[in-house]
Image (cartoon, rainbow, N blue to C red):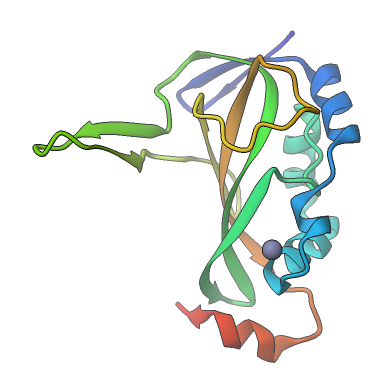
Length: 167
Ligand SMILES: [Zn+2]
C-alpha cells in the first residue's frame, strides 16, 4: 500500500491492484457515442503532464473514468466536467466529500463539500459512496470525484455550442 496526502485527505492505495483493474476496465467514454464522452476520451490524451502524473501515481488510467458528465458549461474553449474514478485502498483520514444532511421532513439529502485543487483546471475529493462498482475492481475501493475543465478537442465546434452555454 502506498500513502498520499491530498488536501485534508490521507489515503492508502494499492497502485498495482488499481493499475490491474484499469487494464481490464472498458471506459465508459470509449463505449458511449455521445459528443461529451467522445471529447473527454480524446482530450485525455492531451492532458498536461502534471495532471497525467497525478492520475498515474495512483495507478489510475485517466482515459478510463468510471463515469463522466458535462455541466453544459464552457469557457475559453474548455468544458466543465464532473465524474469519478475508483481506486483500490482506503481513506485513512478526511471527511467524505458527500455531506449528508437530514431535512426537517425526514429525507436525507447530499451535497458535495469543498474539493481540493491539484492542478490548473482540476479539483478532486474523496468518498466511500461507491457508484457503478464493476467486477474489474475488488471490494476495498474508494471513489475520487473530479471537477475538471477539459479542452474541447473535437473538430465540431458548433456541436459544443449546441449543448453548452458560455460562462
Ligand atoms: Zn456519453
